[in-house]
Image 1 (tube, rainbow, N blue to C red):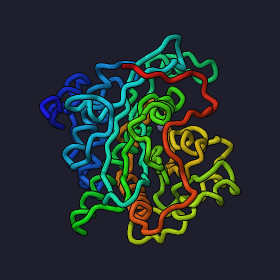
Image 2: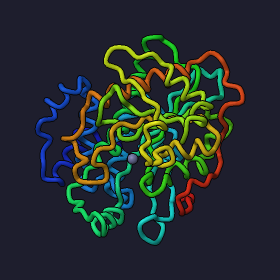
Image 3: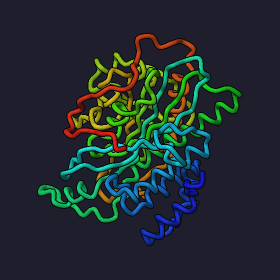
Image 4: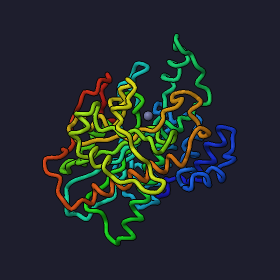
Length: 363
Ligand SMILES: [Zn+2]
């Protein structure tokens, strides 16, 4: 589609604004052993606004980039926009968290269609947004720990997750071509906006993405900050505590999945939560509250929500290992010949997640 910018155009645009080139990218890619992950991270980090969801013009460059990546992989548009890259977008409005008034942004949504024998869907989630200008001001004025937010990139939180989801999507396409058949179930790729605003993009998807009605969501796999830390110690969440996680079939499936080679190893997230309440703080939680088996991969948060969360702090090998683990989990569930009776639910639904503020249609 003509409105889609090429990767090179977006890199040029963003890098020019930042006044910094992408030196070292080739070396970075080699370290990664996955050039796509490295270049996706570089593009997403080069955005001088840090993917601020309340800056529509800048944010649109990022949504167009993700839509372009999906399109070049053969992932179909699943938003509700009418033309061009907008067909991958779901526009919504929400009550802002760090200042008064509503803002408008877009989720990016793509779909790999299954073989048509199932009405069950698996969803892969990675929030695309970073901090809003208002949230950055809030940190700069924080009485206990004031910090300058200049140069914030948000690479681990959450460009790393977007890159992992795009890697997974690409690999699913290669798997299908190798097998010469699609998977049994649809796999939807959801890149929400306004996660940092209180999971608002995902709430909007659950409440307003009416074109998904009739399908039953049987599993949700979310990535958060998967570009830092030891790939053999990746926290995997299926609930806020052991009882909830133990009752989650997708969590069981992930923990039982055998690892090999350089793939990630998982540790139970709820047992290594450190009092942070991680399970309730990212997008999968909306689906979990809606009664859908939902899991989250969480790497090492590091200095998230500071300017030190940048490209230089990422270990691309960790990023890739997590993506590959999730690839097997998603492909396994999406292609499981057994129906998943009594599991999951359809859209729409509305949930309370503990964050104030409503979501609304924007057109
Ligand atoms: Zn995040």
